[in-house]
Image (cartoon, rainbow, N blue to C red; front, side, top):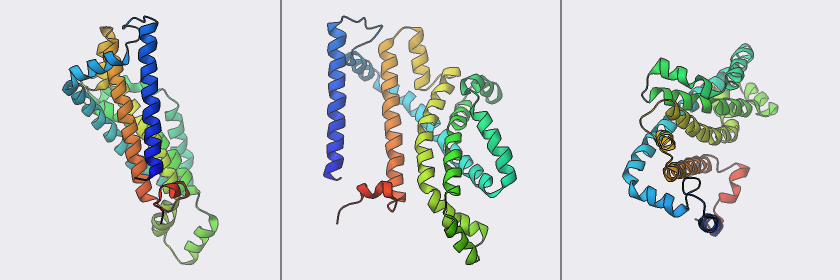
Length: 259
């Protein structure tokens, strides 16, 4: 790891430590009731007291998030290819996707419970539905952003539509696709929590909802902390994959090792 990366990690760690200490001090100084805003020390004690229990719920939420995200990538990229390759389908499917995305997902989440039951399936469906729009939009943008002269060269070399899609359009679309996936992974986590709010006996969403009923604010903050860490790790994992897949892109030049 380069010196610049270590410096960034150090600055982030120091900033978080300062904010946590300031939070602890202000809560004690202003005598804020724990039910309103618990100090960080109380949140950490709550997390440490039942750490395996929290990890079990976090693992369930992680599986739902990754499952919904993976399904969104597969379906979203497939829809984007169909939209780009067919003007008719672009006018129909694309419009339908935009209209569906404008519907609040919380409003239709109970329908998934009715249709799919109370297991993991409705959570996966909601996570997928929230995440897929970003992938479709950015993939379509990337596939359409290929310079016209490159496409003309491919046609002049008698390249088939499949070869031009795989060897020209997809490589050019990868930066946009990864941008959409980095947005979608956070949305998939939101979708998993929404699904757990609607109907679940497992997951961090269930932990938050049950803690709300007993006014256990420290437990709510502990679950939110785990969600924040999970979201950062998922985003960092995608950024690492992007760095590996796109070493040639301008956005990754600063990460290349110096000669």
